[in-house]
Amino acid sequence: MFEQLNTIENLTIIEPQNYFSFQKLIAHAFCVITDSGGIQEETSFLQVSCITLRENTERPSTIEEGTNTLMSFKTDEILEAIQEIFKGKLKTATIPKHWNGHATERIIKKSMEFLV
Image (tube, rainbow, N blue to C red; front, side):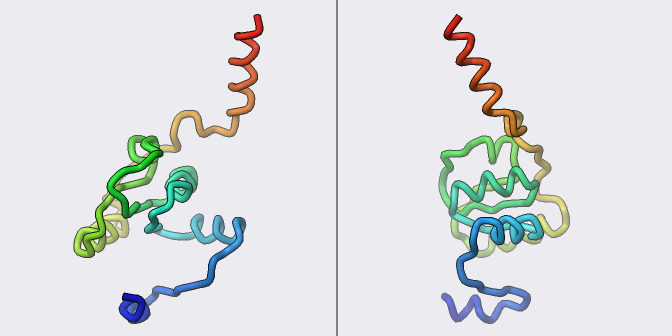
């Protein structure tokens, strides 16, 4: 399998990256293929198309509102999805509703309601 990856034009296999370098790679990608739950969130927040090679996700908001699409590991379907992303046709998405950077304020507000 690894040998086949090396034959793909414009595909570069790199060593693991630190957090900030990886965020930069995601931000500049036209799509990301992953099996990571955290990356499903990162791509949705950055509005980058994501194909997650899993049967389910513990982060449904990335599917319902975000840029994430779940797929099984079927090469033809993955290729078709990539082509649709490249054409801008796979799905439209928004950043999930409460992913606005104000979680701390919402938590404090709710906590204060319980104290009163």
